[in-house]
Length: 395
Image (cartoon, rainbow, N blue to C red; front, side, top):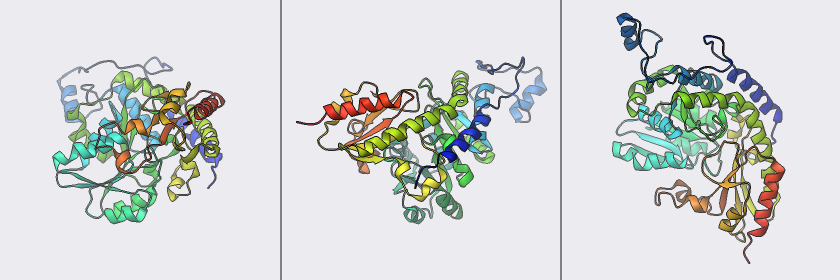
């Protein structure tokens, strides 16, 4: 299946209109104000009563609602084609608050096996304390997922999945889950709302680590969930106000700033990463490249473009530690989505939480290296990788 750049261009053009749709503010500023306040006051008793009763549109306390945060949430909902959205202090806050708003003791979750590492640890370390079990399945096998659905409460997807970038046929799985009365939830951080809109394909809830491409500058930690008004209202009632992981006004402002340039940045990440992935695939010391562009899986149909994150595996003749240390422009660091280029060798990440590591448990090669291609010149980045591969071969 070949990459059609026209699909990406159309998606980028549509997103550009949405992210630049500014709300009206007093004095008509080009950039909206930051409502850096902890609380809001009322002109009289009746106004306060209406706010507490939910009869008005006013704000009470920034832990539960803030105009700057709401402006960001409005844009995300529009980008995802959702009715509503809720921002959080981190991607994991969005994941945990959303999951806990859905499940209760005795429930079972069906999850793809290569989900985000901290989501996996949340499933394994915390949910059993509440009597919730998680069954992991090969998300590429739609029949296997469908067979696991009966009796489940939640289907948790991530397409493409962490580290190995496996795809799921999210449209088919959404239909199957709906037929079984199972809520569907997907981590859409990799594709961003520009290149994949799961809600339009039947998924109920979409979560993002907004620290990644949405923020785009590696200076913000945040998360967001988008979905139907009723589900977001349930989350707002049951988990968001009590777990307390609210999105701060300053971070919401930075995220909105990131959204304004997201359509431009995402194209650069995509083009540079495709160039480097293709060259790595042809390199004699690289044994495999995990990137959705090379997949013929039906799940690729919902992707209109690609981003800057993928994984490659090196030959046994390459010393992974020496390769990592030989790089000049690629830095060793977690997260991704910012201007900088990064690597995470699986061999190093396996040391995190021994015994509760999805990458090791589900057979990801210790010779795999996750690569985030930033906004630097791709020829400079390729020269950096080529040099490191040449100088890290074992004697």
